[in-house]
Length: 358
Image 1 (cartoon, rainbow, N blue to C red):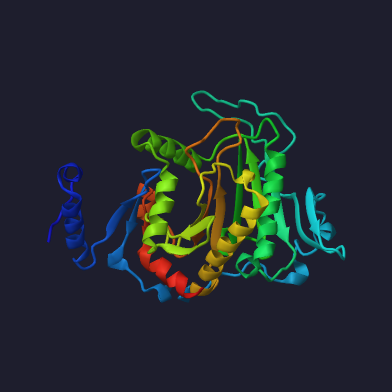
Image 2: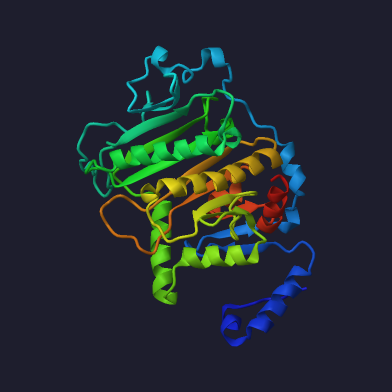
């Protein structure tokens, strides 16, 4: 059965006719979908022909990193020759709850000026920047198991370090990310995040910046505002929301159970989040992380903050957000060759399943 909706159809058919064609496609068994990211234009495949039941994903067992707390480098960092803390939060009794220090094996070297290192037709610059590690106190309780106040403290520390690092004239972008599990790149089991302050802007964020600006010029509307309003109205991809933030499985999810956490207000810059909103953010983020942990049996995952660069330019069309990517599959030939990722569950079904664990 062949049913096509061409680009020309979209301009000549009524909305009702388009929906009727789409419904006919959905009624055909095992027809995969190619979905396009509204901001970047990237494509993903929702492979219903390979579809799994939501509970199938919980059968994956996360590989454990070195999990011996007696030999943990982060339980007592001062005893393992870590560099001096650049930030530390303490309780009234003097014990620490969170600390940030320079990475012992940094990907970027601090204390230098960016220099051109071009060779022939190739362009390069020196890799000066900052690479820091943020560690929470408890060896066993990872992000999904922390309470909202503890999570808000982590966001507060992210913001504190961001504001400090962005002052360096060589820093134009700050990457904040968290790896959980060996498959996600965590070589140390103790919960920790990383911050990298670098002179160049993330290529993926650059795509989002360009896409959001292009969408505004074409539609006279903010693309992230359109997304949030639609998802909040439709409800089918929402995991959890409050009056200030929303967690949802993106329409064009790149991986099974991918979740985005996004403010409901137009704000390009994460570092400008106020204290009240950090608590609201912590509530929604906690719900998202807890549901992923329970639904997928504590999977390996990465999350990272996408925010506008700190290069002194204005980005009014953008909106900062957090992307959470559980490790539910591995890239193979098609993904590596095309850059098009394949997800084996519809984000609508993923969100419905995650909500059950709340």
